[in-house]
Figure 1 (cartoon, rainbow, N blue to C red):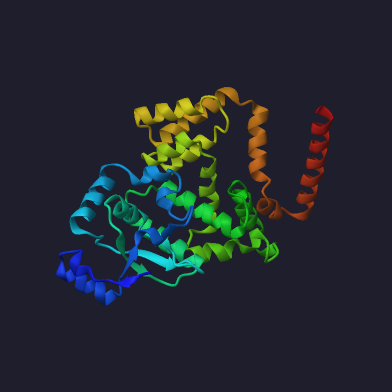
Figure 2 (cartoon, rainbow, N blue to C red; figure 1 turned 135 degrees about the vertical axis):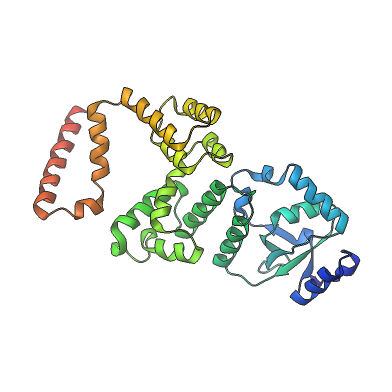
Length: 304
């Protein structure tokens, strides 16, 4: 059970104690706190390794010295139990356990699922140690969960929602995209469509983004799809400190040597066959495109 803070015996900082009492901070047993799987962007992609290293050890020593954390963690009561779900402050909670504490200062709030997602992301966005790529993947994962679709299918859902707009049924994943983007405080749909391409990055490419590879450079790498030299090009770009533009130029050179005229034309046409672009054509041209596509489909089937 949580008990009202009596911080004087734990932190020898009178002003902090006074503030804690005024804000209604509780002391909660560490063993009563549970982590919500996949909730914290900090550990989303790297697991427990996100809570290791010199900075984490320094935090442990600080907590050992003062007997508590300087900033309370945020919890909500877990329904039908005496446990609490950790909303914000997993690093502090882990450090307190490593420091040998039994209780930790906490703010216990009544929060719904949408609120806890926003609190966790907003807190982590203020911390430089949380990489943008982990925040992005956590946000996309949370959106996929709300839409009840696999993460691997999320980009297709976002594209259909962008290109077709309100034509989808209200209860469909595409019809609920706008609602959940707003509820979760995510960027615009157009931004998410572009950023969701990064879900196709390899583990090495994701790690490179954590270490400073720009989003523009990562997106350029995706243009190589399953090219055998994709990994080699990444290593060379990191070793020589290429800019996104330099990497893009090398990719164009590589593609130019190996992509035939027919392949390039097919790529160009594919980009032009998006529903929104087709809808802008006059009816007569739409009908002509339909006839040409039917003819192309027939030719390809005959050759297979």
